Image (tube, rainbow, N blue to C red; front, side, top):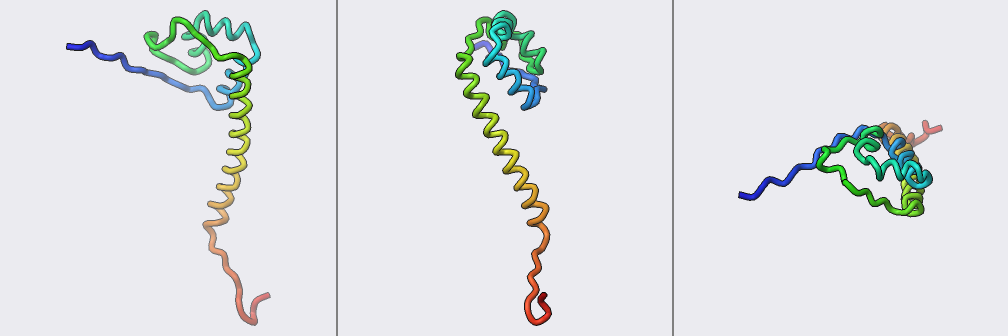
Length: 109
């Protein structure tokens, strides 16, 4: 009988804003990158990402600071665009849900 494959259990409580800040640090802070490489489980846990010990990599290999920085900038642009879309969507649902009445005939002002 084959041994069962370990499951991946994660508890993520980090907000989108804090996740971007975390990534920004990885893109700019050599000491933070070294700290993550040294003790990934603790650093992730301290920032709201808890993994089973079996799922924490023993060796962390991070993308370059430039690659992470580019990703952060793309995500910020998406987030800004999404806020604009969400604002429009809210207006659409609130105002669009109301009936639009157009007066016709002699009584129209």
